[in-house]
Length: 218
Length: 249
Image 1: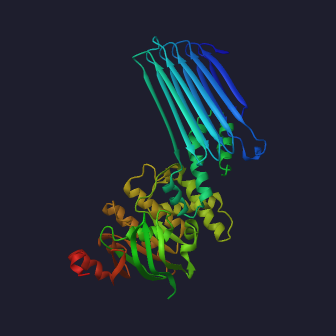
Image 2: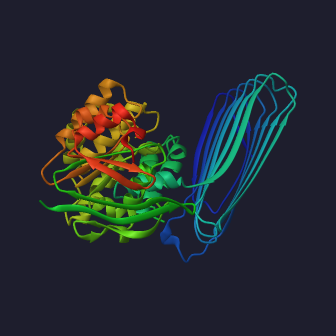
Image 3: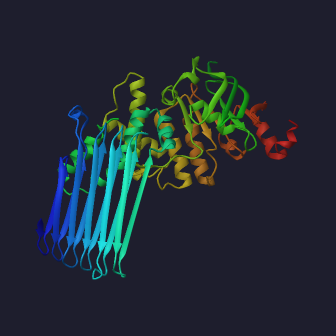
């Protein structure tokens, strides 16, 4: 368990970690910003990972905390990633923002469990949870389980989840401009992932990752 | 005069319903052909079939572009061979910037032609030059393709892409729909300035208005899946005056 002291900031990027298990307690006015990125490169092919579990538990124990969680998984073959977030607003005035995205190719599997609690005392909480998933194959599978428990009445809380496929009309539009289907798919997949990567604070890492997805080819 | 496109007895359907019922058309280099016709006649189907839209099925007939079997080519190869469609409804592609999109398209074409990828400097100056032609704003580069564009901007963006890619055959599918008179003038001037003795255009429209700006060599009337009448630009005026029913088709 990690304690983030009053007014402090904790910022971490977990890139291709075999497992993330994080339990954070936030004191008043602290700021937590976490990225969990599972983007195994195609070079790792054959290494045959892999079932990965990311478990992130955040407790806002003091007032006016800020929590940001960004998760992105881009999976191939039989890779499987489960991302669980457990965010509890125990006291008021806090904000939490979660953006969780999966891109699933081949026979890969994704699972998101988003557990959000707003305690009776946590008035004026502002909590958002978004889960967007892109299936690139008929055999890929996504399971999404948002669980919201809201016990305070003066709060703002939103959540949304959607799973879809690449836009066929956009693919045809690009092909009509001479871009082959593979490259067109790649452009759309990259576009889907860009907003998560753009939230990374470490400029050098951000640039490197944004640059690298140009090379990720289906 | 060199033959650019030849369509022979083309039949096509969507969802099992036959829309094109035997279209014949020859287009030579340097020519502008207008295709007019009532709703549901098959105008947009023709453009979709020529560009390889997978939603449509060609049931019989042949199409040749510079003597090559166009229908045998995948959609992107048709584009690389020089067929360009200005979409009636340009597609929004959130997250893909105009710069990345255009660079991918241009470099695909250069690769097809056996050329090296364009240098970043050349690319940007080409973008700037062609944007000016369509009076498009500088900030276009970083915007997602067509996302949040007004109706007029979308159509200008189509012709901008046409200017970047320099196709030999452009199909303008109701490029005039949703344009105010200023945007129409800009779009039409753009099209006219891209005209060369080697390329040709098919202009699909409901209204004679566009043809005041883009003057056609031939006007064809497409009705119930066939070209039922062909004339010069005066046919468009006649249509405007009498309507399709007045033609005694």
